[in-house]
Length: 59
Image 1 (cartoon, helix red, strand yellow):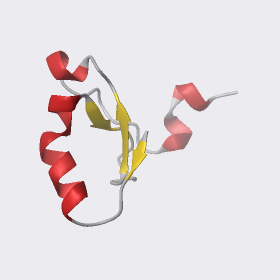
Image 2 (tube, helix red, strand yellow):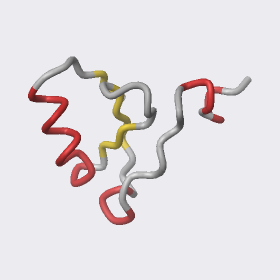
Image 3 (cartoon, rainbow, N blue to C red):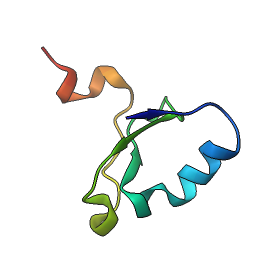
Image 4 (cartoon, rainbow, N blue to C red):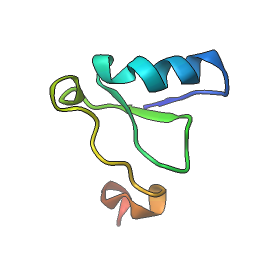
């Protein structure tokens, strides 16, 4: 997981991250990216609205 501040790094990752398997995960968190190796081939999965919709975080 990587959290980025505003600025050039965030813009760069939004454009090129998928080539490295880095995907934005939550629609409401433009700074939050996670490693998804399959994204290099299939593209990034659909984003969750926010962390409360992420089934991986359900207890």
